[in-house]
Structure formats: structure tokens, C-alpha cells
Length: 116
Image 1 (cartoon, rainbow, N blue to C red):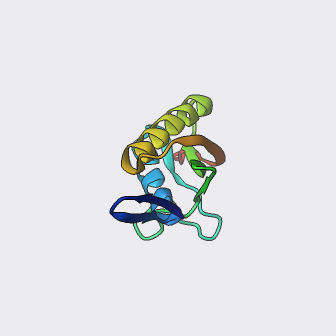
Image 2 (cartoon, rainbow, N blue to C red):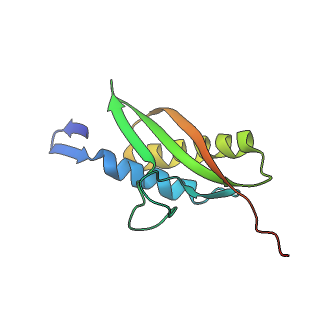
């Protein structure tokens, strides 16, 4: 939970909200099939937008961990760097709090079906 206080009171942003913001940012990256959710076979979706993404605030900075599935043939390192950049930008813009790190874990690859 992110808590900030000013002269008017407190603002609280749940870790779940940070996770959803991160998931949406990942959805904008070419080559990503979706967020990996070990608990089900489906991928990125509205109902489980934060599955496969965890966020934590410690010492006034945010850390995000994201598990993804990529398309076969993409350059995974470049896709991961783009995710890190987009997530950092989205979270910092929306919360005003510095993102210290975005850890991207490639957990799966979607292999295209071959027609026989």
C-alpha cells in the first residue's frame, strides 16, 4: 500500500492498483502475448489484469515484478526493456512515486500453429 500525506490528508494507492497500471502498460508492447498467470491457463484479461504482476513499495520507491508470455521469434531482451520503460513511465506518471525497478520474467512463449 502506498501512502502519502499532505496538508489535506492522506492518499492511499493499493499495490493491486499499481499492478493493474503495470499490466495495462505491458499490453501496449509489441511481441507480448500476455501476462502469465500460473493459476489458470488463460492470459491477459480484464478480470485478472493484475495476475502475474506484483508491486511493492519500500523506502518510498516502487518495485514491480511481471511474468509474461511472448510471441515466438521476438527478441526477448528488447521486449523486456520496452516493458521496463513503459511500466516505469506509466506508474511514475500516475502515482508521482519513483519506480526503482521493474523485473520482467519471461515465463512462456507462444508458438504459432502450423497448418498441415
